[in-house]
Image 1 (cartoon, helix red, strand yellow):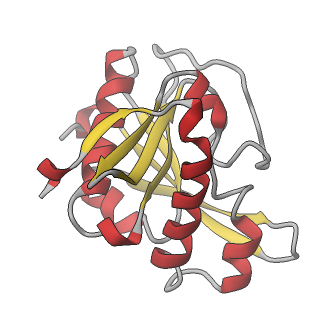
Image 2 (cartoon, rainbow, N blue to C red; image 1 turned 180 degrees about the horizontal axis):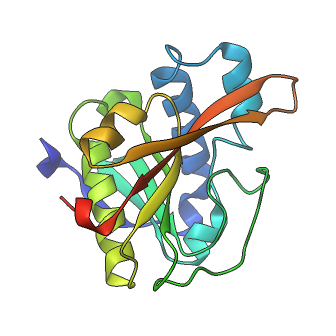
Image 3 (cartoon, rainbow, N blue to C red; image 1 turned 180 degrees about the vertical axis):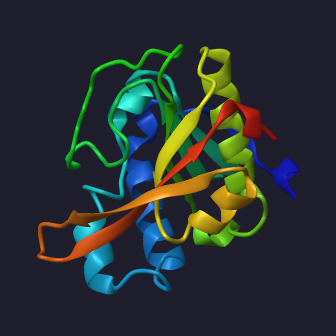
Length: 183
C-alpha cells in the first residue's frame, strides 16, 4: 500500500500545511489515548512541528493524491520531542559516535491511516539518520504510536508526564532502538 506515497524533504513552504496535518492527526487518531483537554494543551507545544528539523533538512513529508498525507523526521540535536514552543528545548548537536539520533514528530493524516505510511516514514527517518552516522535511535512517543514502534524494534525505557499550559499533563513514552535491532 505504501507505493501510493511520495516522500520528500519538507520545506518552509510546507509549514502552514504541516500545522494543519499535525492538528488533524492528533485530533483524529489520538482521541482514544488522550482527552480533549490533553490534546488541546499539547498541540503546538509537546505535539507539533519543530521547524529546526526543516532547517536541518531532516524532516520529511509524504504526499498522496496531491495532498500531504504524513510527516516525520529525525534530529541531530538533543531535544527529544516537542514543537518550536515545546518544553525542554536543547539545540546542542549530538555526536553520532556516542549519541542516539532523535526520531521526531511522525504524524499521519487520518485519511491515510493504517496504510503503512507510519512505517514508511519511520524507515526513511532511520535510513537518513543511519546515513549521517547514527547507529542508535530514541524518541518520545505518544501512547498511540507505541504499538508501531514496538513492532519496529523499539523498547520502552521510561515515561514522562509533560505538564501542559492548561493544567493537564501529557504522558509521553521514551523509547530506544539499538543498532542491533535494525529491521
